[in-house]
Length: 457
Image 1 (cartoon, rainbow, N blue to C red):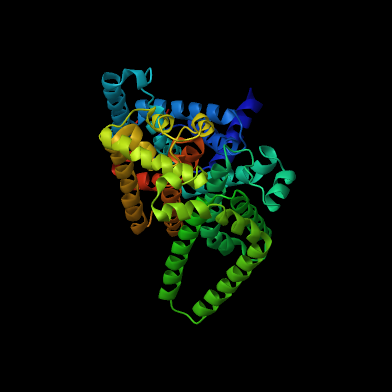
Image 2 (image 1 turned 45 degrees about the horizontal axis):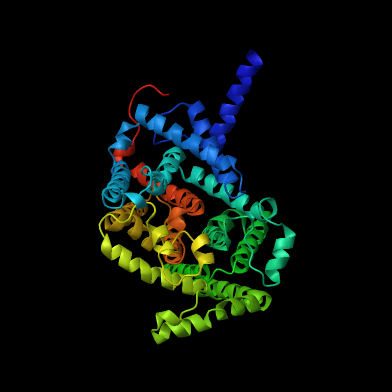
């Protein structure tokens, strides 16, 4: 028995050096190890397309509820708990309203997971324990798994070659739009946290080389996915962050400020030119595919708009407005967005049989759960942003974390105008782990999230 006890102590010691102590919930080292392991397992398995990712997520959520009900009931009375309760209530009321008005279009029971998935970030943040190091470990784990995904879940080098030849690639994800947002967020993170990396390793190091390779993989994946919405959202996000960074640099004194700006500007410019030479044709062809659709839209004649990629969106969005106007408060329940598609006159049957959403998270939300559902989502995000700002001002949330969060939200809010990421597992995953990294620092600032005194679990 002695060697086993020593081995257990060694594992606990290794874990303590790797994963920082949880400052948000008062649990034993064994439970911290279990919660951290399930969290990292989920972050690693989801990008690789493993069925075990859902199992790890379910076990992780069950463990979180058990810990909170036994040792963290103060969390249940926090703003996050009230937001979660409001989301459940909206779904219940929407289902009940449809059951009374249109029982033939009502689901057999309310499906609470549709809005409940938004709050996975709180469970993740709980186990990150308010730690910057733990957050970076989680994000790095997800990044490494994502970089391996094209070879593990996708078609490997053959699919990369297809992308270079102008074919749209998915790398094993649900479709190219989901590939694009995952790699787009990763590219954004690599850009924002580059200063943190170079500060500790220098420009000429193995870590810097690995960073450059990761940037190249993510950039090409975004381009080869041929998702114009992500190209636009990522461009707006990066441009906004660039302006913020230039403003911060210009506020600093020193002779080398302008020299650094010119040097970095030259490097970025050369990289952009080289990238355009490599994949410029792919971008030009993709942007030119919808010229007829845009011309028809500008003419104001909706009936002449073809059912192309953009055309399907325009027709379904236009139809959704009438459905929203008819039941604006609580919407049409869980089947709402599907009802819009099925009852859209003129849409070819092949689209009706394959499309089950409106390619717009906000319209999906309004159609399904009305203004009340949208209000829960909007207030939740405003609450997180305001407290993230306060946490940054107090010095708890690192500056590059807050910058990454701003960039992510710009990308996220724009991207959801053109795809229903809020209701897909890839959206749940990326929103959950990114916002959790911000929220865990917020929770560390607020008294209602401090551990209750007493015996450890």
